[in-house]
Image (cartoon, rainbow, N blue to C red; front, top):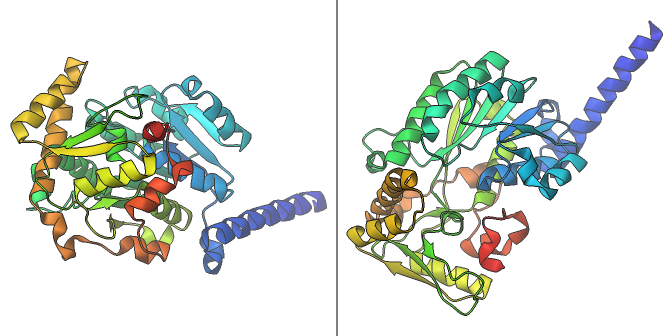
Amino acid sequence: MNEIVKEVQEATLMVGDACDHLCDKLGLKEHHDDVVTGRIFVTGAQGVLSYRVVQRLLKAGHPSIRIGYYHPDDLGDFADQLSSKEAEVVHFDWKDKTTFSSALDGVQIVFCELPYILNWAQAFPAFLRACEKAGVEYFVKFSFYHARNENEMYQKANFVRLHAACDDLLSRSSIPYTILSASHLMSNPLVMHHAEDAGKDKEKPIVLYGASEGKNINYVSPNDIAEVATRVIMYSKPHMRKEYTLTGLQPISDDDLAYALAKHSKRPVFYEDLPISMLVQKEEDGFTSVDDVDWKVRDFIGLEKLKATGLEEDVNFVSHDIEMICKRKPETIDEYLQATDSMTPLEKWIFE
């Protein structure tokens, strides 16, 4: 009996040490007793946000992280790096419901960055049901700015409406949740590739294109969103059943964005504003898969039309949730572009 008591005491001390370490890393010393140490499942290893959330959890020394990816073998050295830090990479495919239960086995918290694939929103209900069945205790989902606000101009964009439908399902589920609704990501021009790529020719201009009509746009850093996500994951109690609006500090024009990309990549980058009809044609011409044309073009055009309304120039558009949770101001576009160590391979192409 004494041996059993001794083992329990040692295990308790180990958990306590883990909590101390996590609190210290995340600046949550005053909330020692509330820091989460259970298994966290992150959907996607290479998503702009998932990648950063995993890095932050690893840096904080979280003891149990599981990353879902549709083909772990494709991760190569990155999978080895994760394994060396005792993070678990498992097979998880949004298109295959049979992969859900094993990926969620023993999971306490889920961070969900939905994939940008055909019919992505249709996969969410089944995944949410699997989470309920697996006994998931907390669900953190990334969404779009004001997705669930009725009568918002943003409801005209199909991409936003689909996120709203998923958010509604989550809010009605049995799982406590936090929804992180963000404005346009600073990484979008690098990841979405709405540009004429000059390839490896660093002298040839890279031309970004859109239809924002000279309006200023609120771009938010994925670093800020990942920092908020990590904090609400690790210290979940005060954030449960809440929705946060995450925006940049102030709006900038797409010309300013192109200028910043040129400055930091040391490559010529320009922005070209096009009429919607020309933008649609350019987008359609850029796809090699017919299946991608309709929905991706529709999403892109919908968001560009929102930018052109000028809504994001209003001072009331800016939220202070990042500042409230992270105790600092949101990153500028220059700060985001300087943090190349935090970027996914998809974002780094312009710097190569």
